[in-house]
Image (cartoon, rainbow, N blue to C red):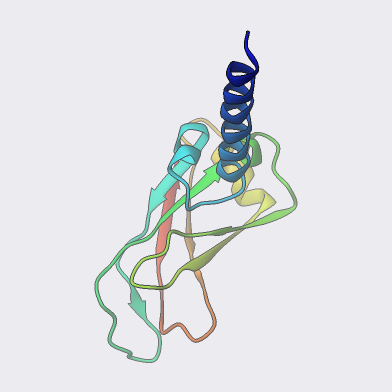
Length: 124
């Protein structure tokens, strides 16, 4: 192999490794859907009667967290209309997803100053 070929293959390996690292740590990455459980949120629920534009968010829980659940985990949703939310899961919730046909429902934790939340239903 030539030096240029080796450099190009090294770059491809580095990019693939970076994508895998992002996929296993972020809900906002389409590659994560290949190795985890993805859900789309329900409509926004206003806090204190605030008006909220209709929209949804996407979130993926990496399969590694389902197969070997940490004590707790927080995931960041996709960004829609200039904002995102957090999905916080306990170890017992992650363990419930590990069961055959497991499912959990969780309300998002809002970002600072947000006027609404969303509910996600994760199903295996």
